[in-house]
Image (cartoon, rainbow, N blue to C red; front, top):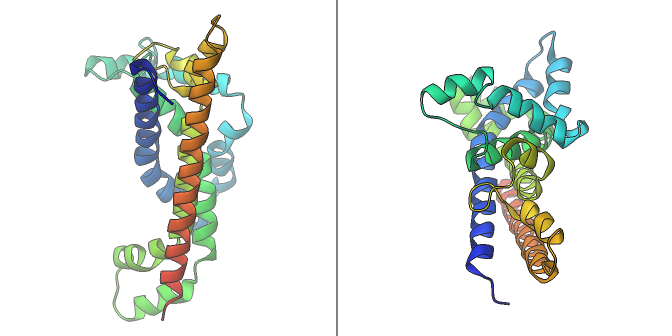
Length: 229
């Protein structure tokens, strides 16, 4: 299957957007998941609901809110523009939209992993003199590794397939914001574009399957290493 330079560019941009969304969203997702799993505070249910809001809101609504906030005339976007940072109608905006849409998919499995981790191991480490940071990095985080892997793959898949928020926030600009879903939609609206659309659909399916296979392999290895005495 021969791909044109334009198709290769679309695939490369989609992978860049998805990987950027996951890399920047994962640390915040882990911190948020730990906060929800281990800390009691009055607004915890509200915070949890707000985090999961992108899952129930129409993606177009999320994209429109991003445009209002991070657009050049928005309160945050106008300030960022003064320091040379731009999200609207840029690939970084596509990564931001994809990251926000996939953020709940990171938080949920990681939070469950933190809740299932044996707190007795952390208390034992504390009695041996390990500080909070050491306990988190050497015990809590490794125990939550399967959940982190699952959340990362889910967020990557969501970012790779994100359409509604992306097209509303950054439009579909060839070479700049036109990711795989946007390109497929555009080709289906173009006479004679069915063959190219089918190739991109096939590529999207292959990439998603590979991501799931790699995740399964890593999860099994992580579980096996944790089971060793």
